[in-house]
Amino acid sequence: MVAQLVKGLKPKKLKIKQVRLNILNVLRAEGKAVKKELDKTITTWKGAKPTLEIAIGLTGKDAIVLIGPGGNKEGAQKWGWLDEGTDAHIIRAKNAPNLVFQTKFTPKTKVKSFSSSAGSLAPPWRSVKQVQHPGIKPRQWSLEIVKRRKKRFTKSILKAARV
View 1 (cartoon, helix red, strand yellow):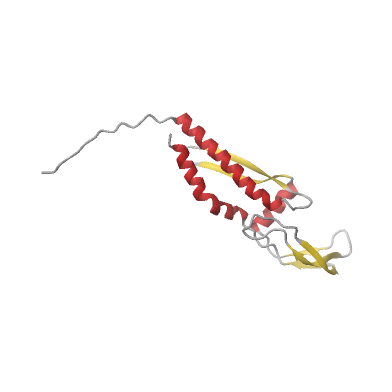
View 2 (cartoon, helix red, strand yellow):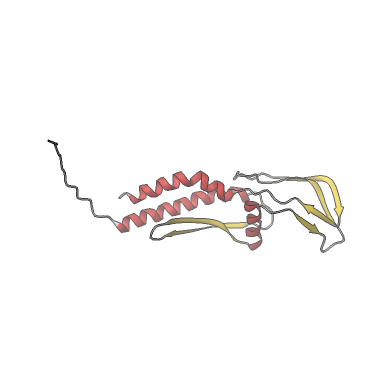
């Protein structure tokens, strides 16, 4: 003979509005946290700077936080070049007979790092009609922020859904 113990379970009624509100609050908080991290990358930029904009969404199956460059078009383009990198390319003089530039360059940002330093330019100077630019190493900020925040984000969403 097998002993059986049975207890009927009656789940509580799901508070859909409260769960939705909790999740939206988590999405807003996550957007602010990610923006704060990514803002560090542009603190020392000169000239055109993007503004990092947050968009959140809650659909049937997905909770979404998007943070990306906006505002100044040129600044947003610079962000894309740095985040994703560029291929090697030729730069030609357009408005003058020659390009004139300093050859020792230290970038302000580093790969997979959200900090931003002063960077530097230093002599010797060079004057040429065109130059083969080696391209920009991708900084991979978008990939790195996802990697760093994914566990915390998932945990927060699951906690928000428990009401």
